[in-house]
Length: 92
Image 1 (tube, rainbow, N blue to C red):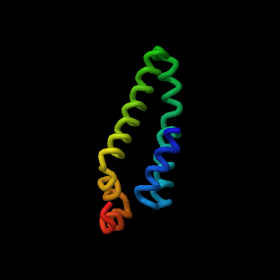
Image 2: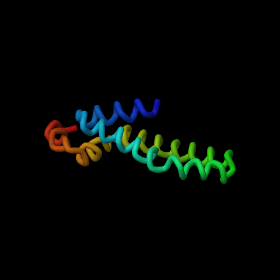
Image 3: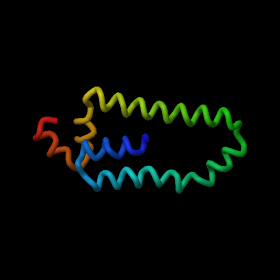
């Protein structure tokens, strides 16, 4: 559900399919690069503690996304995108 929300949010803010593709690439790249190391860490570290840490970090990221969305910082995100000028002209 979080993946769908992030993709929807990025598309609504930027209106750019390129930005949507970059988000997908940014999500896949760490998975590809860290898969082997993640397996080693999962074997060595206590699984309960690992789950608590990873799920807490996901909760924090989701909370930050909600904060950015509901506080009206969408203009900041739009300024960072390639379509920022279009949003500034619209007054978003």
